[in-house]
Image 1 (spheres, rainbow, N blue to C red):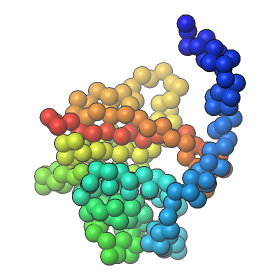
Image 2 (spheres, rainbow, N blue to C red):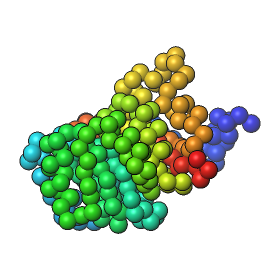
Image 3 (cartoon, one colour):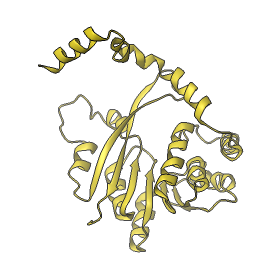
Length: 241
């Protein structure tokens, strides 16, 4: 039986399934996002203060969203991660999420103003912020033989291939890599719906050093009036790499 026929048969038995597969559900994302934030996030004065300080200094409001920050905190605790590398500090919001979960954070930021604001926001936590571009700083960390439990790449949506390659080199065996905004970058670069069969997904898929998956998400951002389809790469470095 074809998959569509199977679905029709399932719906015939339970009409409520139609509510699950209704594309209009996409419009309910902001409501569900708001409920999740209200239900799952605990008060965190340091994170709140970091957003206020960043806004006061004119930093763009593009920090990881609160639920995403919570995900990073949970991931850090689940892995027992002690060393995290972050590419793209901005105001230090995600650095705080990692550090409060028990990790020592090395963060890379290209903008001196952002670095200075981030250093204010992470005061008292085990966070170092290295000033420079990822293309300059990461190779130096590779030369130093640095290895991290988690590498979190959340910088500009350009040069993702190079950043992923360096992230692999800097991640310990069985450590993990989170490469943010992959789907957004594919839309931005015209890699969705075109004739090219080569994109960031296919290139990572050919990398024998890792096992990876795409985690699709629907993002509700206060800057954008509608939900946004996005997704990140979640990868682990093989033990024999």
